[in-house]
Image (cartoon, rainbow, N blue to C red; front, side):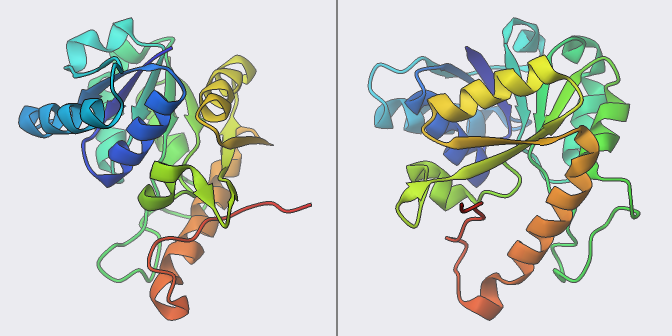
Length: 213
């Protein structure tokens, strides 16, 4: 598959590492092109022979999956701006609408998760919620406590969820289909607790959420 990631920060680095580990092609877009260029160079050095490069919005139409690896509400705004080229595309929202200044609350109204707002902003896109419960550090290795990371996948389009699940499993992770896109409400709230607990529990952003038998 050809995967484009919007963003060039820590999460795009982790997601890019996993994408290349799965043998896929990777394109990186950022509003600061130099950041996308730098990340593409770094990832290509880490994965010799990998197909990775920076790109721009105009090339989105050539990709199989578009990952909005942006904080809320930037992902929603990009989805609205790209709505035309995202029509029919599998779009992955990884965001968590947390008040990062206080870690005291979500910044969306109850029952209106970021993923559903993105779906409303780009109504012809096939939006899937995934990767929002994983941190950047563990994504680089793909493992937590010696086991593959769990990635919760929610969406209303079964084929789109299957495409995202294929990306997840090829990257050495475990995909868990948790149902329709409205399950993003619970996923975002649960990750809010996970994030807010990092300092209190001394986890240093290295923990992961897993379903154990």
